[in-house]
Image (cartoon, rainbow, N blue to C red; front, side, top):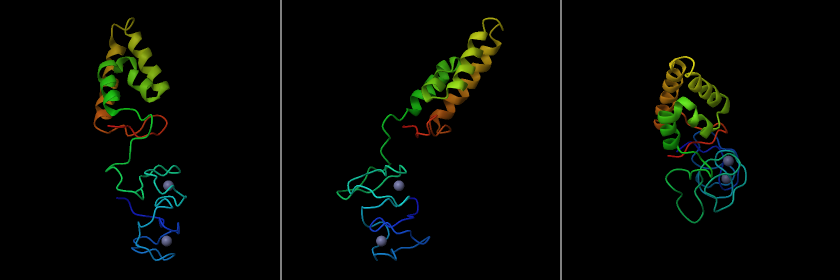
Length: 150
Ligand SMILES: [Zn+2]
Ligand SMILES: [Zn+2]
């Protein structure tokens, strides 16, 4: 768990390493009204801070072990497999939103027709490596900065 920067009960900024909030006296992490990471107000039932995206413990219970995948999060596995099998066409980068890179790979892939496959190989190896990276967590987020889901 990352260190709490703000009191979840009163929103006051905490001293590094503090165990108790100097503003309201509750143990650090108690409360549900403010984000521990950015200090903005949160709904008591929120499991994610809408301002900064960190996971929160809702009032009614324990949060999922990991912060819930963001809506629309791209899949690591899909990106990885697309890179490995269709990387020479840049499909995985189209999928992740890295369009200029995707277009470069697509052009290299198609140019293979006139380069006796040499550029297709280059693009293919490039896509393959990125596919493996995506599968192993080496590509943590898509072009919009959204973390990839498992
Ligand atoms: Zn407090
Ligand atoms: Zn926040």
